[in-house]
Image (cartoon, rainbow, N blue to C red; front, side, top):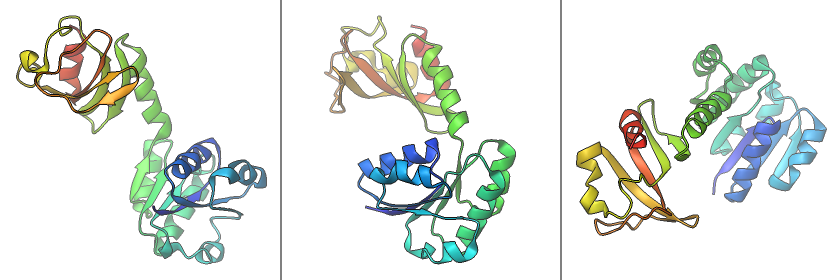
Amino acid sequence: MKSVLLIGLGRYGRHIAKKLWELHHEVLAVERVEERVNMALPYLTRGLIGDSTNRAFLESLGIPNFDLAIVAIGDDFQSSLETTSLLKELGAKLVVSRAARGIHAKFLLRNGADQVVYPEKQLAIWTAIRYSSDRVLDYFELDRDHAVYEIAVPGAWAGRTVGELDVRRAWHVNIMAVKRDGHIDAGISPATRLEPSMTILLIGRNDDIQRVLKL
């Protein structure tokens, strides 16, 4: 369990709070708008109404005691930048800040952010990949060139075993797991037979997985 400081409780921040709560982490959230704090309270250890650009206010929170600080401010870049910088100055161990544009990311990284996330950009990429193919059910980017795809079993692979297909040699991808009736089975072996009703989780280079999708 980690102690997390979450700053900003717009829609993005509330989604983060809810997921952290489901993962059983302790979350202290800061937001200027009282209504937003009240909406997120069911998912917070504690919620405070305050200005995260106020150094004295942030200092009173004991910033070095948190394992992680997330700056989820999305509608005021100046406040996001100031908050990010103050958090690092006050001893934050790890600062993750939200960016909407590439230029924002550069400034955030120069001013204290350890990591930057692009929720709109990342969702846009996921949407384009997910819905531009009838066979892609989910997608998770690992880096610029590699990803994990959940896809329907290609017709040419149905009824054959993992060992028979030897996809690592033939297609330069790896089958991580199969999914049956919504349940993932990672205990696959060369004897695992792929069925049309399954989906499979492939990991590899995007270009190689796109070749598989054309089967």
